[in-house]
Length: 236
Image (cartoon, rainbow, N blue to C red; front, side, top):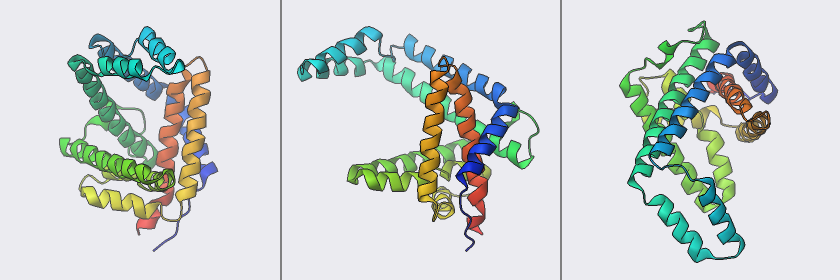
């Protein structure tokens, strides 16, 4: 099998170049989604108020774990809160899949501009991508429970599974997970380093009056897709 290695600097550079070209419109999409999901959570009581956060912080500070438990329980008991959070997660997931397809299309030449046609995917693609993401999440969670080191090893190996599923709608769920594992073979540390760099980019974006976080997410999106294209040859 071919051995294509991830070039971190190239992936980050590509992410930056595409973000400069298409980032503004995509950042607006992230912003709008953020406003919608936050609004839903606020309307249904899904968000924790500053006073609640302060009360929990004070309880932790004085070691009053009984109060912490009571406050956390009251926060989680609202049906409306769970409903709002669930709807918000669904919206965020749909947008993330559409943006994966958009980024894949822009970098492959299938799209020449930011277009909502990228979201016109068959329902089966969204469904399979959801199952792939869910299974990957479970695997990473179990690996982390075993030890933090296995978690750091598994997550970088499986992060590309949803991207593969989006680009290959006909692929099966297990096939997509297996493809990500094969693509990242020998690139675990590089993928982990890329993830750390992207976290740093997001922190810098947040420091830029908070609004920069949305542009940072665009860089992260394109850097991930650039990494995908770099290692895609490992499937041959």
